[in-house]
Image (tube, rainbow, N blue to C red; front, side):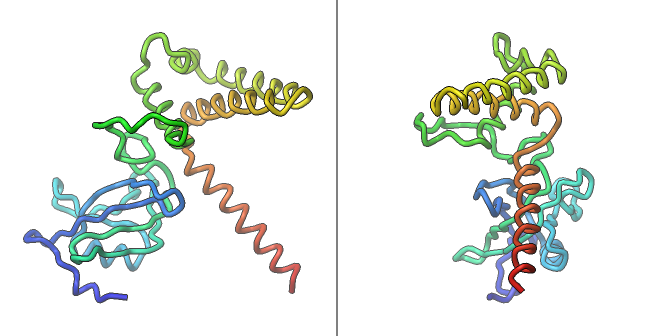
Length: 215
C-alpha cells in the first residue's frame, strides 16, 4: 500500500486514470482526477473524475446511472498515472458503447482468436448507429423489435431441432441464436455487462446458499 500523497499530479493538479473492466480486462475510460476526485473515489468506491472542459468534479454515472464501482486502484512505476479496476453498471461511453475506445486506427491481424462476444456487440452497435445498406443486421434493426423477436423464436426452435440431429448442427444453430439474441440486446439497450452482472448476482446467491447448507 502506498500513500496517496506520494502520487505525482501534473502542473494542473491532475493525474490520468485508466478504468479497466475487472472481469474482462477491457479498457473502458481514460479520464483525469484531482486530489478531491480521487478522495471521493476512494471513499465512495465509485469512479469520480475532474472534467477539464467543465472545470468541475464529475461522478461517472451520476446522470446516466452507469456507475463504475471501484475494486482497486493502482499507480504506475512513476507514480503519475492510475489504473482503476472497476465493475461497470452499464456502458462506460456516453455513446452507449461498452468502452470509449472503439475508433480503430490499425486493424489487428485477422484470426479466430480475435473474436470476442464483446467485439460482436460493438459491431452490432455500430450497425445500429450507421445502418449500412445491404447488411442483414441493418435489415433487422429497420424492421424493429417484433421482427427481431420472431427471429429469436425461430432460432430457438432450430436449436431444439439441431440438438435432435447432431452436435455440429447444434453448435451452428446456437451460434445463430446467440447472434440474434445479441441483436435483441442492442435493440433494447442491454449490454454484455448487464448480463454478466445478472449472472454474477445469481452466482453470489448460489454461493451463499451452499455456505449456509454447509453450516
